[in-house]
Length: 99
Image 1: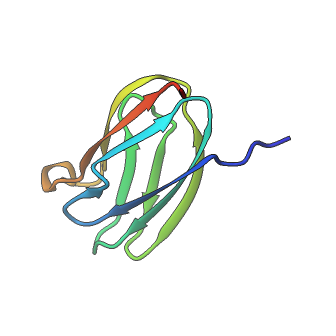
Image 2 (image 1 turned 60 degrees about the vertical axis):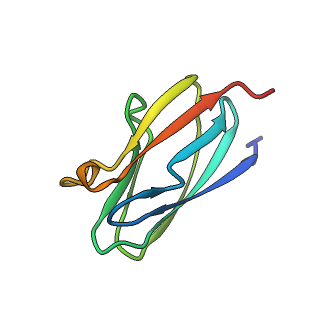
């Protein structure tokens, strides 16, 4: 039986930012990410240190991906296209135990 996502996280990628800048999620539970790119260029939502978590989003596109994190900690969120990080597409993913 597939466990349904317990939380939906809405993320907006612009040409200058990842919003929200900090995302807090529990470990070992499915999280549905709804990632919308309102910028003019292709962007990516990726967590450094978690290579399997990477979502590419074209301009004007919204993508939904469900992911279960198993590692606890703080991971930089980045877009690895061109010089996105220099333009402000940075954030932080915090994964903690569910209390």
